[in-house]
Image 1 (cartoon, each protein chain N blue to C red):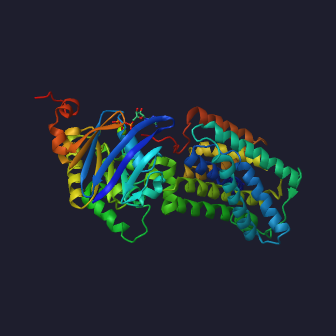
Image 2 (image 1 turned 180 degrees about the vertical axis):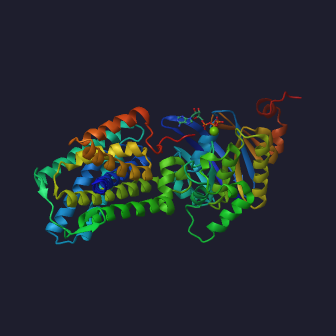
Length: 290
Length: 238
Ligand SMILES: Nc1ncnc2c1ncn2[C@@H]1O[C@H](COP(=O)(O)OP(=O)(O)OP(=O)(O)O)[C@@H](O)[C@H]1O
Ligand SMILES: [Mg+2]
C-alpha cells in the first residue's frame, strides 16, 4: 500500500515539477510572475488531444507537437505581454500576463467548449507486478517522460553554453549583456523552454486523468506556484525536487491522515513556507546578493 | 594608431543628462586613466562605451567603426571588454563557469588554453575553479573579474575602480597586472579613485568633473598639476 502511494505521489509530483520549472525559469530571468503559464499547460493538453484524435498521431508525436505549439505560444506571450510593457514598472508585465491568461482561457472555452473532454487511450494499459508494487504501463510512461525531461533540462542548464547564459541572465542582465549575451534572446528561449515543458505536462496530465477541460489551467497554476515557492524562486533543481515532494505529501497525507481534500495540505504548506522559509527549502535565486 | 575616439558624447539616465559633450582619445597600447570625484560620471562613460547606455549625441569610434548605439552584446565581440564597477561577478556560478561566460562570444578551440592562462596569471583561481564565485574574497573576485574580461580576448580593456575596497596587497597586485597586460599588447582604460597610483601607471590621464572632461595630459603632467594635487592627491600646492 505504501509503495503504491509513493508511486501515485511521484506521478502527481512529477507533473507539479514540470509546471513549476517553467515558472521558476521565467521568474529567474525576468523576476516576473508569469500568470498565463497554467493556460499554456491547458493548451498543451488540448494540442495533444487533437493531435491524437484528429491528426492520428501516436503519443510521442503528440507530446512533441504539444511541446512545439506551447513553445510558440511562449514566443507569442513574450511579444504580446512582456516586451511591449514598461520594464521599469514591475507590476506592468504581471498585469499584462494576467490579461493574456484571461484571453487564452476564454479562447479555449469558445473554441473547445466548456466541457471536460475524454482523453483517448493513447497507451495500452498493462499492469506489471514488481514485488509488492503494481505499476501500470501508463504510470511508467508518464514517470519516464517526466523524469527524462527533467534530467535533460538539468543537463542543459548546468552544462551548455545557452544554459550558462540563462543562469547569468538570471543573476544580472547588465553583466550578462557585457559578456556578450543577447538578453532578449535568452528571455525568449526561456519562455520557449518553460512553455514547451508545460505543454508536455498538459498532455501527460490528460493521459493520467483521462480527461481535460479548459479550466484545468488554474489549479495547475496554483500548484506550480506553490512548488516554485517551496523550491526557492528561480531555483530549477529546487522546483524539480519540491514538485516531487509536494506530490508525495499530498498523496500520503490524503491516504494516511484520511482527508479527501488533499489541496488542504498544499495550502497549509504554502502558508508555512511563507511564514517560516520565504526563500524556499533550497534557497531562492532572485535578488542579486551583492 | 588610435584605438578609441570619443567625440561630443552626451548620455544619461532617462531625461537626466550626465555626460555633457565628452571627448576622449585612446592610442593603441596605452594605459589611459580617468579620474574624478564620486558622481562625476565615470561609470556612466564606461557604460556608454560598452553599450549599456545609449548616448543621445556624439560618436564612439572603436577600431574605426562607430559603436555608439550598438547593443552591448555586439560590442564585446569586437574586442572591447569591461571589468564593471563592483566587479559584477556571477556569484551563483563557479569560478570556471564565470571564465567560460567571459568567452561567451568566442567559438574557437583555444578557450580551454586561455582558461589555463588565467589560472597561471592568478593561481588562486585555479585552486578555486569549482567553487561558487560568491565564496571568493573581494580581491579574488576582482582577479576573477579581470580574468573573465580577458577571456573575451579584448584589444581594449575597460576597468571601473578595480582597486576599490581591496587590501593594499591586492591593490599592488592589480596595478602590476595592468602593467603586464600593457606589455602583452592590451590597451587599457582605467577608471580610478586611487588617483596617484592610477596616474603613475598611466600614459595619459583625463580628469572628469560633473560630466565634463576638465583636464587632460600625460600621467606625469597631471601628477604635477597643482589643481590635481589639491583635489585628487590630497596635497597642498607647493
Ligand atoms: N541608474 C541611474 N539612474 C539615474 N541616475 C544615475 C544612475 N546611475 C548614476 N546616476 C547619476 O549619474 C551621475 C554619475 O554617476 P556615475 O555612477 O557615472 O559616477 P561615477 O563617476 O562613476 O562615481 P563613483 O566614483 O561614485 O563610482 C550621478 O549623479 C549619479 O547619481
Ligand atoms: Mg562609478
